[in-house]
Length: 282
Ligand code: PAF
Image (tube, rainbow, N blue to C red; front, side, top):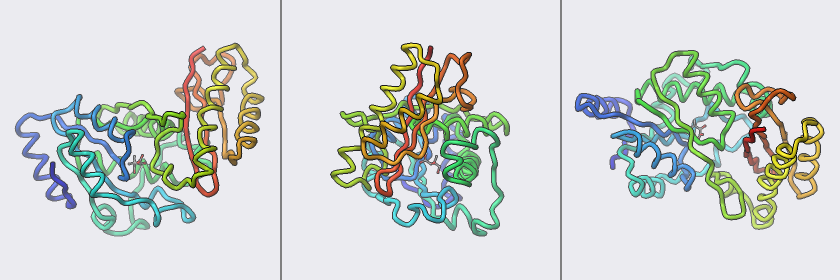
């Protein structure tokens, strides 16, 4: 497995693979890899001949008061895990390589509607940063397929729409959320939790499951269910950002006629913001 920092080198190597008729899979990440990421890499390895995992902590998707400076950078450990998972190339560019003229001068990609609400409302500009860097990664790697985690449900919806609208010739695959034994979704940000917060954190998934059960038992008072879920999170010691029951495709508030619903949640434990989701069909 090779690690490449320059776009020029990446393009030269990938051109060689393409000439040999190899298919290319991309797994975009911000590093600090855990089993969730590795499951995406394994999925890419099963589906493509060559797998490129990008590791880039993308400044454009962080708000001014967010954790860009402290986001864990663990390249050596990441490389070890990727090698074991059968990854072919690690692309770990610097911010100067990706944004040579700086963020203010950068052309951006805006994905309307699906970027609004939920995390988009709490983190203005976040999905613009994600859509921009992912478009650039697609142009740099020109993969046949790319794999993203379903844990970031709204992000996956934004990327699917962006690919559809801009007619990007790439197949998007989603990988299921990987959880700790107590249900907490694996996330690089779990490492920020202290012992007491870590003990509270499984309440996020518990609340998703309880609400999903109420839905499958026939409740359709969605707004009341959202309020009940936020109350349960608060009582467990979290500070809910939102708990929204939405149409799984549009991400708009669920209505009685919707059959496929997704429960989206974001909640704070101290300064750590956890997100998770669960889909139910009625
Ligand atoms: O999900 C992430 O880690 C990031 O948002 C992504 C897709 C790598 C873009 O920076």
